[in-house]
Length: 316
Image 1 (cartoon, rainbow, N blue to C red):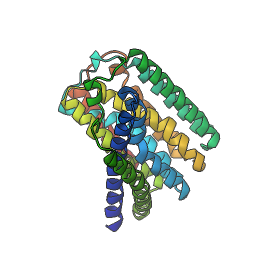
Image 2: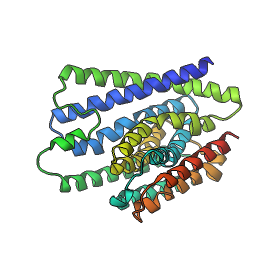
Image 3: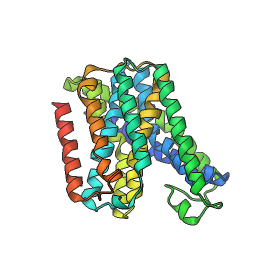
Image 4: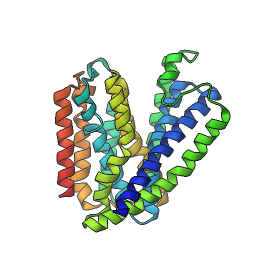
């Protein structure tokens, strides 16, 4: 039971530290004059993915690379099936009004390229550099497009859309948020990785299975909370953008950076099943991203049921 409690404590520390890091980074950037829209595309994206990054690095350094890969693959599957499915059960999301074709197609290309790299052998530093270069290109393109459509001055609405934005936050509080976030992330990652491996051993399953389920679900909680609130507020753009952006950053940024600390072997189970489920889940977004179909309760129920079925198959 202690391993479960310590895993929960590690996850809680990760989530709180990640939130503090995002709040500190957002307000620091706004105080020094960086446009809010650019902050949302870069700093916020990195901050919300910081728990996955620290888990990946910690897992590789401790000789548990399956946990690192399982976390990313499982998180990407959960981001589509669960993170979009559950909010759709609560409130219909009018995805027909959005134009997410460009970002969605980029995500699909990144997913296919990632699967191809996995089939070429272990993910090493050279694979990581390819993924990080692709991430840099994606971020540059997003910033370029954002700046082209952005007004010269920040607006109140633009700032309000950023999580934790407070233009009047004092400098000491910004520094405190950054310090606590940066200190808490590695502590939480170590707690979660160590005790998740103990749980895997107790239940006779691999680190990869724990990464695909327990750790992946835990690290997807911030995205789930954000998307549920977006669904309740009728902000389908936030919900869809959150899922697509998180998946892109996980594939290109998290795995790319993690491989710089050690190689990640790709187990046969990933090649035969989990990578294909991740890719299939991404393709399920095509009607909403390309054909302008609304994500209603029936679709939400289907996506949620598919996720529960996937977890059942993995654990069995």
